[in-house]
Length: 201
Image 1 (cartoon, rainbow, N blue to C red):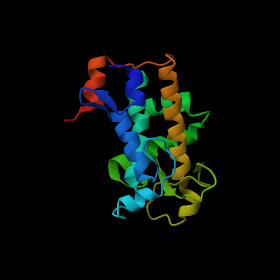
Image 2 (spheres, helix red, strand yellow):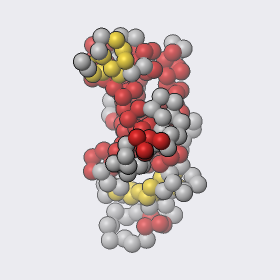
Image 3 (cartoon, one colour):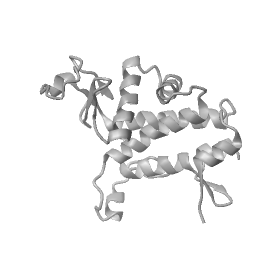
């Protein structure tokens, strides 16, 4: 299987589809974006008869899982956190260590619990499209006590639109490097097919 097709095409031939592109297109639609071009597409709401609330957690989960998928395929790191950190360091344009940790912990809290607080890492999140920064770190680190009431000063605020824009940028950089022959899969072809493609008929 051609890795260049895998990162750029949904249909790979012989009824096989790329899970990376499926996840990307699904995430785009859930954020009112055109699934092919990533442009804002308000008409999606009308087509879906308003049956879903836009900007749900699941769209953000998809984008965060895309980071993990890119890590599995293109990083030699073994652990989930290490893979995501590697992807963000290589393609994220000098994100700080605190930013990288926050993105990884957000991935964990949403993917594992569909929630926004992680007691072990002592990080809790607020999602806000009005936040000027992609990630605004708390004035005071949260102590892990759920009874703490001063959410604004102890929470990490994430602007989901800015975060998904960053993940879209990372995807485009990865795709460009693959197409230019600068980046290749760390997986054998059979493993890549088995884990990250689906057969449809």
